[in-house]
Amino acid sequence: MNTPLDNIDDAATSDLPWEVAKTLSSIPFRQALYRIRFAELALMRDWIKPQDSVLEIGGSTGFQSHFLRRWCREVVAIDIASREKSESFAPVIEYDGSHIPFPDQSFDVVCSSLTLPMLEDREALPRLIREMQRVLKDDGVTVHLVPTPMWSVWSALFHPVVMLERAFRRVIGRSKIASKASFTSSGSSARNERGSRWSVGILFRPPIGERRSVLHELLSYRRNAWIHAFETQGFEVIAFDPGRLFYTGQLRFGMLPMVVRRGLSHLLGSSTCVLAAKKRRAAGVQRSVEREIGATEQMLERAS
Picture (cartoon, rainbow, N blue to C red):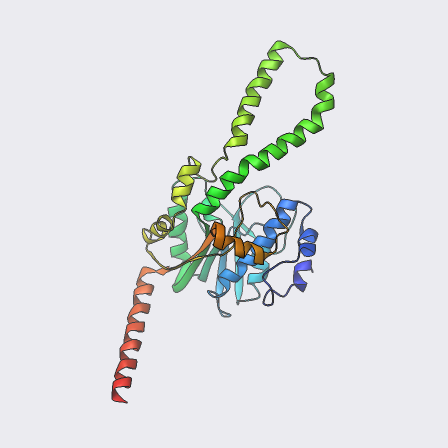
């Protein structure tokens, strides 16, 4: 089945045209999300080779795996069972979110985009990392786009603005009904209670995943926290680089060109980082080989 994505040359651009994004979804948030995810694909490209077999965790609508399959021999996308999706761009296999349904050492690359912070159980992240370790080949690499503390900070700051905008729309939409309604004292009390909860919701953004608070979320998104999560499960992190895009959880200003978001990331901080890791034994072997190559080159230089 052909889609508007088939005509996009991902090798020539990292900015999905807004006109194309609008054909993918009728929801502005998802339109902006697809543009961000398309731009972030380039961050993974250097880690994927044509002969690789790739597993994408958190495939959602199959948007990114649609492009990943152009770069490698095979792509398998998995995601937890969820409500029916209105868009679908590539096959996505449902799994239980705990056990990856493939044999040991099945893939050259295991990757994800902002899937790891969405896990609801505190033990889910180490459990999933152990599963990655199991299905990854000994010389494979796991690559993940993860949020930074700056994403958490700016998302928290933008939250009241977005919620006040929604509240304003609700007031405007219901003003005529409210002016004609008759209220009882008990009804008024119930509304006051709901209003109080709504006021708190306006000011404070709830954390995502299993985090207890936005502060806990901010601390768990630090560079050292992500590296610790992988290294305690037998990986060695070989790269942790800024994604060089700025955006918030609300994805405001979805039409901003990616070049503007890259510029903002230098001023306001990168919203994501790219974490790449190898199995500890494989990483050690690679360093030994590099040292041997370096020593050989030095010997040749001296001999010449």
